[in-house]
Image (cartoon, rainbow, N blue to C red):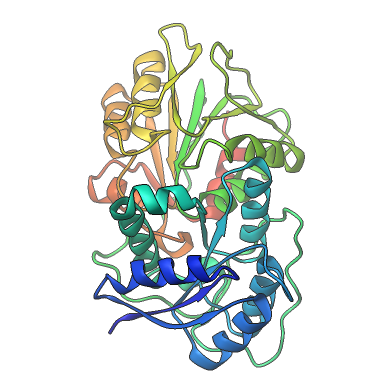
Length: 368
């Protein structure tokens, strides 16, 4: 059965282009369009789409307000479109807090210049979210009988709730592991992609200000977004968080977020090096690159954590860390928005522990 999509945007050009792109995938059916947030709510209740693409700035009702209302009345995975600017990043992060599942930069030039790349990116995201574990988004498979308390636009991580399950995964997900044994580390490295902003927020807000190890964060995110994301995490967390810069020194209780569009590595002395994004690599930043350099710099003193995300980035870097004697944790399927990156770790038998998002934050807070 085709994935049913509702396209919401006040721009007629963008609605047509998104509809054309999605219509080119035989697994996707655009069942309706809307020009503002109010229409989006009405169409969602009427058409029951599997996925919604949503613009932010629209007349009558903006996208974030519409997302909040949809999540109350007919919870549905939403992909938010926003501009490739600092303000666009803040909007995207607010949308995720409101209940959106994912975001994409709204770049008209890319649509004209790289239609095949845009088509693949958008269709892959839509198909992936249609198969997502709905519990991890706080979604139910049926409309709620009465409105739940409204999500606020403040940056508070959403609880992992719900009572229904998604379609059966391709492989059986491993059960949650026993609590990890106490061990000290010189570095904690966390890699993630789709669903990662909310997941990182939930994990890092559980850490105490005197957390004993430095942290490196690798989130697949555009260059314009990482600074705003680091600033938001820094305001929410007891540890300090900043966008990484070349030459940064690792410090206990500080998390360095890899800048979008570039690669973050450690040199032989453990100093952070920020390098231009390599066009041969699909991801910029790339979890494999950072994990691999951490294995060389710290050998068996690294704890690597792989959270929700599409694809398998992090698997080969985790393999290098395991060969050096370091530990690897993977998020469990039930709490993932997209069980891709953690599944790649589990299937390769690289995980020392498989834990829920709540457990990862709690166990991390107890290390050292």
